[in-house]
Amino acid sequence: MALNLDAVGEKIGPVTRQYSWKDTALYALGVGAGFNELEFVYEKNLKVIPSFGIAAVFDFLTEIGLKAEVNVAGILHGEQQMRFHNPIPPEGTLSTEGRITDIYDLGKDKGAVVVGEAETCHSNGKRLFTSVIKIFARFDGGFGGKPAPKTINPIPDREPDYEAEDCPLENQPLLYRLSGDLFQLHVDPEFAKMAGFKKPIMHGLCTQGFACRALVGKLIPGEPERVHRLDCRFSKALYPGDPIKTQIWKTGEGKAVWRVINSKTGDTVITNGIFEYGEVPKDEIRFDGQVAIVTGAGGGLGRAYALDLAARGACVVVNDLGGSRDGSGEGSSFPARKVVDEIEAAGGQAVANYDNVATRKGGENIVKCALDNYGTVDILINNAGILRDKSFAKMEPDTWQAVIDVHLNGAYNVTRPAFIVMREKGYGRIIMTTSAAGLYGNFGQANYSAAKMGLVGFMNTLKLEGQKYNIKVNTVAPLAASRLTEDVLPADLLDNITPEFVSPLVLFLCSQRCPVSGYIYNAGMGCFNRAAVITGPGVIAGDPESIPAAEQVTANLDKIRTLMDS
Ligand code: NAD
Image (cartoon, rainbow, N blue to C red):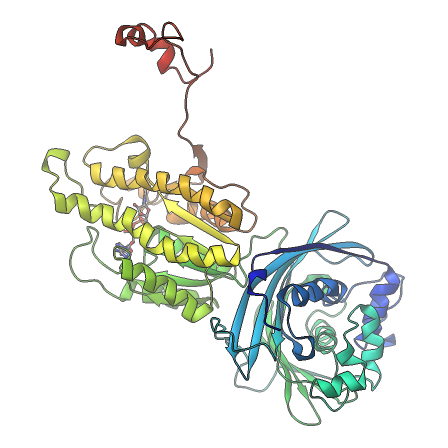
């Protein structure tokens, strides 16, 4: 049976799971805890191993498989990412809601990857964790879908800083499955043979639980509540009874990478492990697993957005033509490349793109760059801009056209291919960049003002067309020191209005939590307010039954021009 590709974007859940302290302790036993880690198994001062979270919402994983209609015999857990927002309490009810975000095709003999994303909250009202789940469907490839994005292996080429040895029992899967993952592959010898294994294999998430214990034990002993990120990729099946070694490399303050090897065969069974710990940032806005395009990100505001998005986990396409302030002359790869270097030096992921937003081909290439490198687009910030100021009588067609082409047509050129991807996946965040010049006018900027107000009209319609697909479109009117404003704003003001003051609002509007669509916000110097096109109360001029004369409109002008109800 073929995969159900229409499942992409469909909401799953809420899936709920009530659990008591006994479930918490049972899970801990299932991943090898015992008298040596009494805090995970003894109800007195019980603590929760963070990896319990995903095991406890196993029904959600099952829903992903069912909705995508994968061939059950070929299912393996591919990758797992967890970002913790609050510690998991030892008992209560978990509620998980999410959706399938992508289905990738690895090829006929290789399989497919179904990607799900979910948020899990606790009955105490707190958001506990965000998870990205990748299910490897071995028998479902070759349907002509897009290829999976490349994954980067973060394991350094040196000896690990810590190693923890363990040995899951022959019967470990029988104990672990009581926590909720009842998949036959881990219990039924006949099913395991049909799936191509000599006997039932360990649950990948059980081995991940062993590793999570090892990571906590080595890096933050007794403080599992300080874990805020746990990512990994399951690379090879492990048979119960085989000894394992969790290898850990510290890569910075509160950061480590890890893998698990089968000590008997030397095979890596879990790879690409990332572990982060420290103070869990409360209600942090994150973009892990998301892909953002920022146009004109080689400097000014775009650079600030790109750096901030990457610092919060997004993979960023840093687009910039690298041209002059008025868009004339040759472009340069330097600005975009430099921002990518900055992002990578800070541990983030980004790719440079030098296409011109002002052409249709350029817009397509920018989106293609996101798809080729990261497989999707979740966020688009239309930010690229130039200025060619002239008082209107002196504004020749070229001057008019060049500005319209970069700002308004540029936004169309990139947004259209991005919107098609977002519509297909049922998720997207799009930002338009307007200006006070567009909203209120500015001498010598007729071209720029027209383009900038055109973007507001563009947003107004796109918000309606995107609504059904969870695509939110908002507009920002920034104020910041940049090369566009260096000769417009007073010099003493420039130091205090850096682009970083605008970025927080843009990040919020790009986030999953953004509740609004079709809004315009002013942002600068840390001050934010909403701008809107508003309409005053209607006034009947003269007799409602007949067409009013111009004089009757004139007679009622005071009432007509008011914006407020009296
Ligand atoms: P900036 O000049 O520093 O950034 C604009 C970037 O866009 C530049 O790096 C430029 O190389 C790039 N670019 C220009 N044309 C391009 C094209 N065709 N394709 C790809 N990239 C291109 O200026 P900024 O102030 O950071 O401006 C960012 C956006 O904010 C612009 O849309 C601008 O109109 C808008 N804006 C800025 C302010 C402000 O106070 N700085 C106020 C209102 C609106």
